[in-house]
Length: 192
Image (spheres, rainbow, N blue to C red):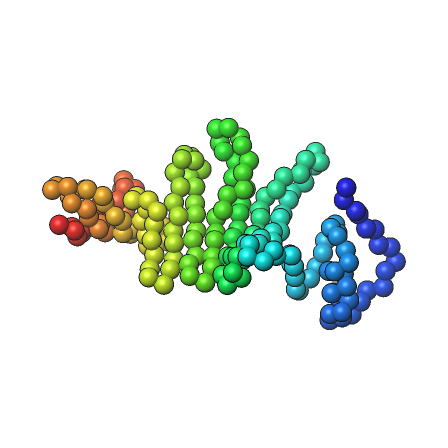
């Protein structure tokens, strides 16, 4: 059962707050619920079992006028079992257009080696692409992803799997046709 604290006629404290006071609050209180918390620092401490990974999370919810509450976003902070590699991930609400199922989908995951951005098509939820940024370069998880250029996506570079007349793969550079809105091939390079 949650504990709700109500404060009335409380004298505001001056910044910065005492670190010993903050430590006492962290060490002695369980779950605390508050409305409109303003802070310039936030500390999350979670007890970690030795030789086991650990995750701390924060959640955002929205409350409709009917009173229903829905999770809309989630932040996860994870450290590996050796306490040598941390990962930060962000999840956002996605509502399946067919089943109306509400899920929190990972859209961003980052550690010191890579940043992965994942997107899902709203029209076809079976289509998903993860773009990975690493020291070695940019990598897409699907063959039909491309890099767009221009405010109106006037140019793009894409991979064409087996698109050459001999069945070879192509690296294709295209420009958007202003009359049709389709992309016209300007040049391509074959891997054969």
